[in-house]
Amino acid sequence: MKKIFAIIFSIFLTSSLFAELPELSDHGSDFQFKFILNEGVSFGQLTRIEKMSDRSNFVRENLLIGGFVNFQTVDLYELLDFTVQIAAYYPFYNAFNGMKQFPKNKLNYALDTFLGATYTFDKIKYVPIDLSLGMHYMYQLTDEYHMSYLGLGFLGTPRFPISKKWTIVNNYFFSIDDANLGGNKKIQPFAISYQYHIDLGVCFSKRSLNPYSYVK
Image (tube, rainbow, N blue to C red):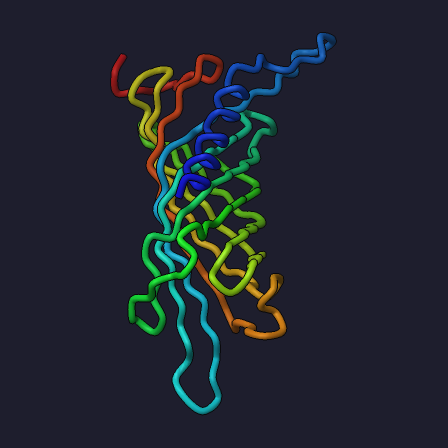
């Protein structure tokens, strides 16, 4: 458990250092590279399905809790930005075919990353929504294996601009992955794996102000 909290703390510390970086400019043009940083708590559910020929499929599930950090470029291109999200999780509940399981290793954890192209739907001025599609990778330590997941992920983020500088963010993430890249690929391959995350976080930015906000 201490290792998980140390990982989450390290992510937040790193993100705070990045938040203090100035805008990047080439001095010879008006180009400025800006990004916003969101961070907060995250809840997730991970499902792995192992197909069986002579009986019902084996279904393994993990409920995850942890923290996330999200970096998103601002006005990099006219219609497109990029998002990088990093998260660390601890599996607080484990199940096999609906039955609760008790892991032998209490220090199991998961590290999750996502890189996607982002479009911002801002027709609703007071609730802009970021829509991202891209690559998802997750590493998970279980009792049996070092597992790696690689697949396609989708991230939807409604933003609630409280003031010019403060924003509440609510992430909804879903991915479909190949779970057979780790130590289980020959011994226990899975037919499909999918997961979803729900995040609640906050964003504070002095360089990218909200054009509309609830508090003037």
